[in-house]
Image 1: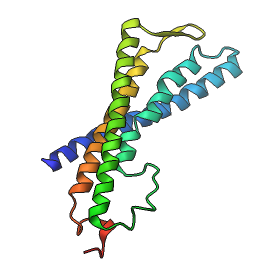
Image 2 (image 1 turned 180 degrees about the vertical axis):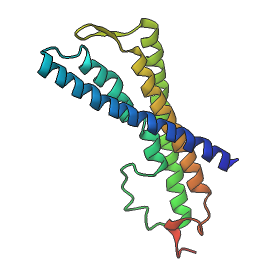
Image 3 (image 1 turned 120 degrees about the horizontal axis):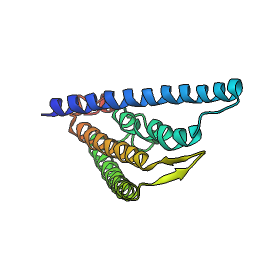
Length: 173
């Protein structure tokens, strides 16, 4: 069961990271094309700033959050917990997981509500022309939801390790 879940989450992570990479590459190409068009032809591409700000930057920033969680690469200060014995460490990690779960659940829920409202309104923004921005609200929801899934998965996996499996507790009996 865990290996199947791990396989699914890692597969989803690979897909999301590929999408994020493509978005980053697309942003680079779009901005370069805009600069080229403005310099050579005197006509920049319409709505580049809005497309980059409302779509591409949102995808680049929020989609990879789950991947960062899976790799345990978020910024953290573990100066107090790194020397704890197994039992107190498990308690602190459980509390961190619960607080993270509560916060990410709230962020996912609020983002979902805002995305639904934006979709129902057909939210648009005035750039050089009118541009629909409501679809970008769903990127945020997807990013937070995947982050939440990864947090729950990694916390459960971390807490289920025996002290012998965990590098944190080498030599701790």
